[in-house]
Image: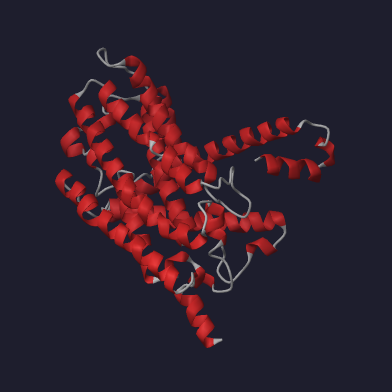
Length: 371
């Protein structure tokens, strides 16, 4: 961020006399405000799309009253949640009960900081971006478990314990499934991972088609990420037929809305990670967005990245309303007996491939043979 501030100061003579720390601070605040606005908007519109997808799959209409085609329904829902009474159970741990939803939201929102939205469109291009995302999203586990325990409700406690076991279990295959992209790029920076997938090969330059093991990595990651975000068929912590609503059963009003927004934020984060690590990120097939003037290159790459990420979110919603919920034992068995061993074997396969073929993927090998 400081390097970006220096380039801004040098490009705009009018602010040359402003202290560098002031420019850096203002850019940090502006970046946070833009990301927060995006997260809130995505959460609202995502709820509308989720209900429309559910309506289509279940052969019904879905939201259709507020605004054209029900498009403004999320604004009505937001106003309702803001105006509802904030109830705290008499025997709840008041401090932890209040803190939990904010901790969950911060854990989800903080991951947006390193997402490579486009050419140069990253709030902070950390050289440990992948580790950072895995670390901050772990705060969600703490917040959910805290909410379940502080509510002093047996359904909430069961939901919190289930969520903790599930998220911690599926973090392992999620992290191992991302590692092949890190090995290919030779960097933990998400921007570097995206840049490593560019070139004249188009979509065949994406990590998805680099070799057979990275192809399987994508599907292993997507399955594990669906479980880590508590999406059906892995929504055991919120199972309505068993736990009423799970860890958030005692929450109402704006505190419930924070859980709701964090869930949609997590959906976008895992979709954005899949886009950056396997689907070429902001790269346009057979075209270099970096070659365009700065503004147009940024806008084009942003549009491409969002289209890819939103498409994956739509697939997650599709799966959510298609498959039945797993049992708790089936859920844990799937992680420890299947996904964890498969991701380890897959990582070994990628490592051997890169060693044998000196880092080249199948498209590059074919191109070299033809040439």
